[in-house]
Length: 177
Image 1 (cartoon, one colour):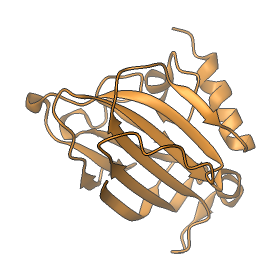
Image 2 (image 1 turned 60 degrees about the vertical axis):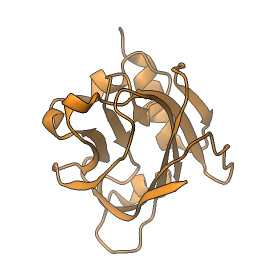
Image 3 (image 1 turned 45 degrees about the vertical axis):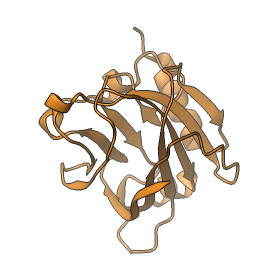
């Protein structure tokens, strides 16, 4: 395991992104989730991920890891979804975690052109949605993003417990191709 980031992540509009620097600002919510069953981790656009949180504005707890193999599902999380991800080619720039306003938080070391599975886990989404804006340093919702090499497969909702996650899953499922 290679832990890439652990700490607070500042979100606005309940959004964060994993994207190449040269693609920043090009990803839309509808495009990211069109054709998916999950509405938390938008992976419908190659080389880009659109992440949703319960909290609208403020700091959420966030961690990001890259593994050599599937680490298994940690069922202690309240929400768990998976998507496939095609890493950008070497000519496409560096892939990085970005906050809503575009600030780069960290680079994500993925093999150029490789295919990965991505698991996005969340806890406290309903608390975050109720808080709406939370500017203190003690987050009310938490997120964990994991990459590992694996074949491309359909996205999946592995666990859903919150009203907020259910709302976003319905949103994604309602987008027409």
